[in-house]
Every structure is written in C-alpha cells, then in structure tokens.
Image 1 (cartoon, one colour):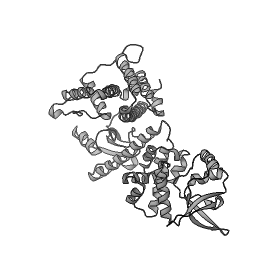
Image 2 (cartoon, helix red, strand yellow; image 1 turned 180 degrees about the horizontal axis):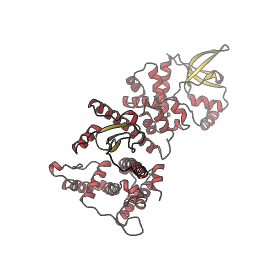
Image 3 (cartoon, helix red, strand yellow; image 1 turned 60 degrees about the vertical axis):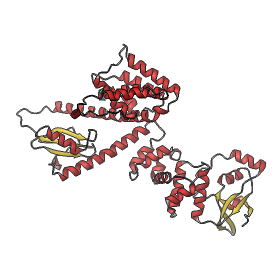
Image 4 (cartoon, one colour; image 1 turned 90 degrees about the vertical axis):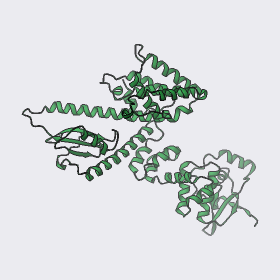
Length: 469
C-alpha cells in the first residue's frame, strides 16, 4: 500500500498530550535549517476530530519538527496520516524517543506507565522498545512516584536516574520521598538517603522486637509510666539497658545475651518506636537519700549527646565507605596518585603541629581488615572466631592475600590506596568526632576529609558541622 504524504496547515496540528518527551528543547538550529532547506522528513499524525468543521490532527512523531516549523514561520508541513489506536500511538512515540536517546529517565518511565495503563504487558514493552524487562520494571517503579512528590521539587524533571531510583525505593512513603526529593542535586542527598534507610530499618527492627517480645510474654512497662525520653527513668524504675538496631543482631539475640549475663529481678521493657529502641528497667532500689535530680539530668543530657555523636559517626562512616567502594576503583590516575601521596603523608606525619604518624598493633590491624573488607573484596578472615583460636584478624591468610593483590601491576595503585583508606577509616570512631573526648582528633579528621573531597566526595551538612573546630 502506497504511503500518501500531504501538506497540512500548522494550525490544524496539535502536540500529543501523551508524548513521553515533555520538552522539545531548543529548536533554533532546526528552524534555521527548515528556513533554508524545508522539512526533509514528514511528520506522522493521526486524525483528532474536527474543530469548527476543520479537521484536526494529533502529532505522533515529529514534535520537534512541528515546533521548529512554527518558529521558522512555516504555514504548511508535510505529514503522513494514519489511523492509530491510543495504544499504537503511545508505542510509536516511546519507541521513537528511546531509540534516539531523547528521553529523560522520568519521561521514559511515564511512557511505560502509559502503555501499562492500556494493558500492555512488561514483556511486550521490552520487545517493542528493545529494552530488557528488568529495565522496564525499574522505569515503572520510577513512574510510581506520586505527583505530589514531583511537584514539591522544582527540578524534579531533571533528576538523575540514580536519584529517581533512590526516591522510588521508598514507594508508599510519600513523606520520605518528598524529603529525599528536596535534597536532590545537593551534597545532602546521600546523607538524607542514608538517614531514611536507617529510619526504615529501625522501624522494621522495632516491629520485629515488639512481635518477639509479645510472643515470648516479656513484661512491659505500664503505659502510664512510659516516658518519651529514653534516657529518663520512669517513676519507681531504674534504666538498665538499651537495645537497638545500631547494635549487632535482632532484639531477640541482644535480649538473650543480656539475660545470660545474670538475673535481672523485676525487669520490664518499654518499646520506644521513634527512637528505634527497647529499654529495660528494673525496680528502683530503695534509698533513704533523695536522688540528686540535677546530677541525673546532667547524666541524661550526656548520654543523649553521646548518642547523637555515635549516630553521626556511624552514618558518616557508611557514606564514606560506600563512596570509596564505588569511586576509588574508577579514579583517574592523577587523582589516585594525589590521594595516595596525601594519605601517605598523613599516615607518616599526622595533621597537627607535631609529627604524629600512626602505628598499628594487632588490634589496629584487626580494625583495618574490617574497614578494608567493607569497601573492597573481603579478605579470607574477616570475623574473630575464639572457638577456633582466631582472636585477631592480623593473620597469615589476610597478609598473603593483601600481598597477592599488591603483586598485580594493573591493580597495585588502587590496592595501595584502598589500604591507606582502610587505615584512616579504622582510626575513626565516636571519640574522633567528640570534642570533649580525650581521643578527639578533628585536625586529623579534617585533613582526611580534605583528601576525600579533593577526589569528589560530597560532604554533607551534618558532617561539615561536625568537622568545625
């Protein structure tokens, strides 16, 4: 069947409201070309009814050419007219744009969602667009991000694929998605993402703790005695132990380990969902002296202060190590060399007014092995095992594997840098961030962060505040 191309007035052509591509972009150069040479490729349009007795057509392929023709002042454009179903329209537009790499991830996602709404299966979409089913499913997750979240961020349409995937990860939690979207494009995005993941894991941990506690008939603190402050003692009770997601293992294991340490007569527990904790109390010991309320309040404030610093130390370590894992192996040679030289000097001389490098005993090397294995291929022995005589991770198997990796010429530079980074990471703990702690080393910490930032690490606002001297 011969294809008929006809000239149609621009006034009778309308953009397709379901076009995946929301922005045709700058068509100035294309308009200049049309003025000089005309339109070399016709538009594909489909009938869209009449208006005041004049036939109208909806553009399926050629939105940029139509916009450029209008800019060039053209009254007529060549078109091929086809009768198409809504499904055929969307398929053609999506295929056309994905093949030309014209779509943003969000536009492509909405295109797939439009086909899904018309009953097209994921497998069929993948076949039609030449994409994998995994990619199509991933884009559909992005398409599920609610309109309210999209509209809350003025730059939402320009977000990267990874940012969109991270936001879609919190499907069903619009509040979390909006918090994350508000940080897109700035240094706090990864920090906020990490924080939201921790909050989500904390909720799951608390839910599991509550279920286990109820299933095992653990005695609960009466509701009328509960306090919002997990550091405070309820009337008639003394705080004994906090269990939380930031400690190893589920609540069931933490509880059993604690009970194995000795008896705790009259123990009751309180589950604090917002804090992600379970707190154990025992009846207060009778005393003739009145408790020093001022001293107790001071102790509570100190426990709360240290808890905040611990969370900063843990969250920042997770961010740094994830960045190291994904970034260091692909660093350019000059950046890799610069980081290695600066970290070597930091190891040998320190960062203060005096030469104060670091040296490691077996315990220090144990911390290095744990840090190294968190962002590199794990070493043969990464956990202590007293039952089999493994009390330190500074063992022959690990040393041999590290030397083997260093012996590969193409990997030597990366492996050396990873080892230097592991030494730095192993030396950072809660006290490193705590200005009131004896082992606080903000000078060394700032020097380390300067090295990371020089290679592209995005320092969050929370980390920046913690680094201020």
